[in-house]
Image: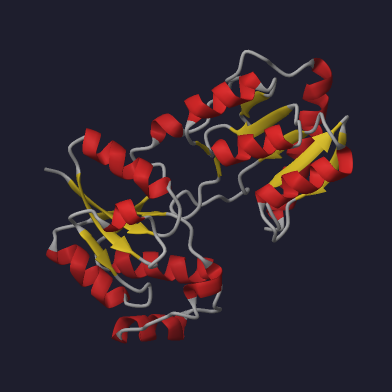
Length: 267
């Protein structure tokens, strides 16, 4: 039986991976980084809890179980990542060599250490290819010519925003940008757009120019659609080939019930 390791943060994304791995008869060895990860994941027979600073122990665990490929899935909580850091010897040595203490810097440091030990970190889309956005309209309702003009402006704004790593989501209406994502996250950005511009907004989410598929794939899921319904949005746009569409059937049904279009666009 093929084996793969999975380094797990918070959120439900790892559950989709586990379901697909089971369907393909792949044995998964799970490394949990936080106590707050999903209970269903903790109950897995091959689950083991580590601190991200225990890089030597994590690598030892993988190698002892003949794991040479891993996937990193789930949210890495910045607020607790360094507060709860427990370093083993190799973790201490790694921290000394890092140029800063950004969460992404630490993750890339971990990836480099694993690679030195002949363990490859796979893209987060591994086994989840069927969930990647395609270049198409998913709903019966499609954007009008005027909507496409608004979408074009939204794509340009979202790409500019992502280039400075400020966020990946913008909300537009009538060919104007009404809200840009900041530290508050996607949901609050959508709420703010609804307060400012009312009904008829279009939510546009794009990947970063140099998106590293191993550590961060943006996603659109049922929560985004619920927020769109809440503000009476007109549509949701996601970048094809670079983003995950989670619970797509449920999302499409809810969107169509509320006259909202969902499209993937190739940039």
